Image 1 (cartoon, rainbow, N blue to C red):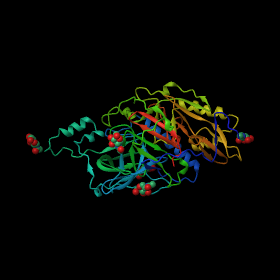
Image 2 (tube, rainbow, N blue to C red):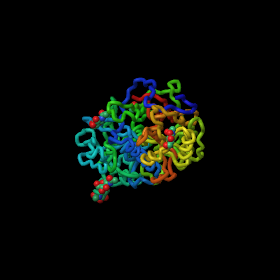
Image 3 (spheres, rainbow, N blue to C red):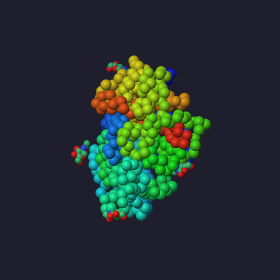
Image 4 (tube, protein in one colour):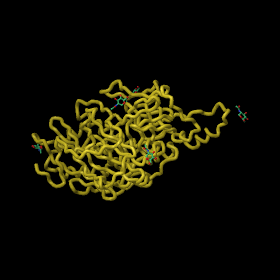
Length: 469
Ligand SMILES: *[C@@H]1O[C@H](CO)[C@@H](O)[C@H](O)[C@H]1NC(C)=O
Ligand SMILES: *[C@@H]1O[C@H](CO)[C@@H](O)[C@H](O)[C@H]1NC(C)=O
Ligand SMILES: *[C@@H]1O[C@H](CO)[C@@H](O)[C@H](O)[C@H]1NC(C)=O
Ligand SMILES: *[C@@H]1O[C@H](CO)[C@@H](O)[C@H](O)[C@H]1NC(C)=O
Ligand SMILES: CC(=O)N[C@H]1CO[C@H](CO)[C@@H](O)[C@@H]1O
C-alpha cells in the first residue's frame, strides 16, 4: 500500500532506530502489569486509570492538612527502578513519577497495603524496607528543618520553641498522610542511605510508609519539582529516561534506562529542545501549603503550541495551550500517566481531525469504543497487515516537533474484527475531571522509544526518538 502524505503505516513490524550510546545508568522496568487474557480489558484498564490519574493531577484540593505531595494509584502502566536503601542495603522497586515530589517506600514489618491486589495478583508480594535491620536509619526529628517538607512553618516553629524539659514536645516529625483521588499512604520521614546504581547518598529523606491504600507493589520516587524530590535532594543538573516499548510488557528481561546527571546533549546529537515553562505557581515552602493549587508547582510545564493530524492544524483554543497564572490550562509532561489526557476542548477537535482524515477508508468501531472507553477506534480491513493512519505531530515552543511513531498513539484491539484505537483519553463522560489544572498531560505511552531529558540547569526539556531496549 502506498503511503499517502501525512499518513503513517501501522504494521506489526516496528522499525528499528539507532541504539543509544552507553552511559552509566540504571535499568528502568515496566511495573508488572496484571496479566490480562483479554487485550481489550487491558486497554480499558489503562484508559480508565489514565483518566483517574488526570483527575488526581488536576484536583487542587486533594491534600489533607498534613498531606505533602500528589500521588496516585498505579495499577497499570508505570515504569520502575530498583534502588537499595540502608546498611546493609535492602532492594526496593520505586515507581518513577515526574508528577510528585515526596519519595516513599513500603516500610516495617507491619506495612499494610489495603486494596493493593488485583485479580491477576490476589496476594500482592510487596518488597518492604525494614529500618530496624539498617544501622543508618534515623527518624527525622521534629526540629529538623526537613520536617518542614511535610508540615507547615508554624508547626515547625512550635516544635522549635517547645521547652526541652516539656514532656509534651514531639520528638519526631509527625506522620505524613498523602491522600489522593483514590488511595493514600501514610508514614514517618526517615533519613537513610540511598544506593543508586554505583553511587551512595547519605542522609536521603524518604517516607517510611506503614499504611497504604490502592498503591503499587513498591514505593514512589518523586521526580517532580520541589525540595523533597529526588532530583532536588541529589542536586541533579539533569535526568533522562528512555521508556521501553509497552510491547515488551511480558518480557521482564527487557528494560529501558534512567540516567542522573548524564552528559549534556545538544541538537547535534539529534535532541530537540523546548523550554520548561516557568511554573505558574512557585514551589511551596512547605508541602502542605494552605493553597492546595500549589501542587501544580511540582509539574513540568512545556509549551505545546500546535497539534497537527495528517499535516493539518487542529483548532485548539489558545487558553488550553497557555497555562494561566493559577496553573490552569497548558501542558505538562508526566511519566506517571500512561495515555495522554486532553481536556474535551482539545480532545474533541483532535478526535474530529482523525475521523476526518480517515473518513471513507476505515469503518469506525462503536463496539470496540464501548468496551475500551477509547475513541475513535477503527475496524481493520480483513486480510490486511498494514493500515495507513494520519500522522500526529506535537509542535513545541521554539520549533521542536515530536513526530510520533504511529504505535505511540494507536493500539491494537480486537473483538469479532480487529481494530485500532487512539490511545489518548479525555475527561468527557462518566469521570468528571473538571477544567482545573493542566489541560494536556503528556503520558508515557506517547513517550515510548523516546530519549527524554529534563535539563534542570538550563530549564529545557529535550527529546529524541530512539530504540530504548
Ligand atoms: C527489584 O527488586 C525486587 C525486590 O528485591 C525484586 O523482587 C525484583 O525482582 C527486582 N526487579 C528487578 C527487575 O531486578
Ligand atoms: C522547664 O524549665 C523551665 C526553665 O528552665 C522551668 O521554669 C520549668 O518549670 C520547667 N518545666 C518542667 C515541666 O520541668
Ligand atoms: C549532579 O551534578 C551536580 C553539579 O555538578 C552535583 O552537585 C551533584 O552532586 C551531582 N549529582 C549526582 C547524583 O551525580
Ligand atoms: C465497512 O463496513 C461495510 C459494512 O459492514 C463493509 O461492507 C465494508 O467492507 C467495510 N469497509 C472497510 C474498509 O472495512
Ligand atoms: C475498591 C475496593 O476494593 N475497596 C475495598 C478496600 O478494602 C476495604 C476493606 O478491606 C473493602 O471493604 C473495600 O471494598
